[in-house]
Image (cartoon, rainbow, N blue to C red; front, side, top):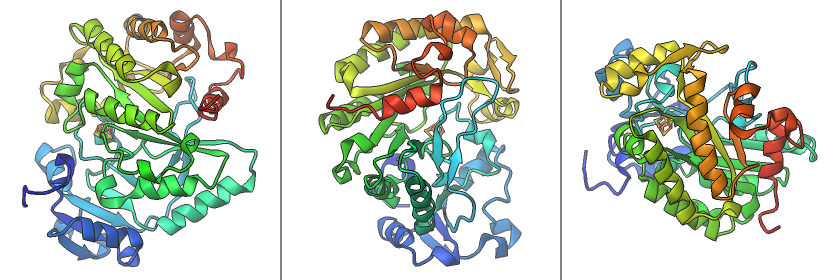
Length: 384
Ligand code: SF4
């Protein structure tokens, strides 16, 4: 593979593109072909391929096999539902986010990434039948104009990681501008803002960046953009009149975490004013039990998996509550000093934690529900 590649580093390892025959002539496939020259291009239904060539055949828990799978981009004719509820947990306060499902997996390689245990394989997949996606979304969004949607593409992949070759976010940005009842969140660890000039209604798009302590970003977030690059992109979006979202998730415990998270929050307020920020989520590192073995095998330096964890009501491992609360309090207090308060919320936490950190529960919010509170924040007029 040529390393004179103009693509960002996290896309340079793609060696082959597998395309379902039904979408071989789709606009998206043609675009990918043009933007990924020199790669093997194979039009075939994977289920007709010999077993040793099937992209899902190898066990993803084996680090070498997983790496092989990440060199394949699969443009799929997706037959499932494109608009979904986020797989939140009934036992904890969930934010009611809806997923526009556009693909699966991610080449950035964060050590803690839950997708390593969530999917059967590590193949990068994009749903290339975009017309089906747009029809389904259009039907939902126009059925009742008074129904507000906060949707995002960053649950099963990074929203912008494949943008240089698919232009998917750019297409979605243009599409969503037709629906005043929709806000699209683009959640990423890249600094890609190539789609920004396609935004004609800034209030409809909420670019979102993951935030973490510099040590975690530099050590455990693979080929992600630096904090400085992410915040420079956030600032560029704010300059264009967009509000941005920030996600402190996963918050990780390590020696010196106070200093690290404080540094990140100082950087945030060096780049953004509180009115540029729609909302900020706080989520502690939590994982399905299967993820631990994957992290041990693939990221042996990730000592944070040996902290004091307990099994939550959702069967996920999470840091014991006093330690979670200590970190949340520290981060929330610093963010409050910077001028944020109602914009803060927790991902998958109980009323006890809400109360201990913010002195209020979801029931104390003006809307009495987290999903409507976040909708209110997402739909706030940026010029007001
Ligand atoms: S950027 Fe997000 S989706 Fe990609 S590897 Fe990191 S945590 Fe996973």
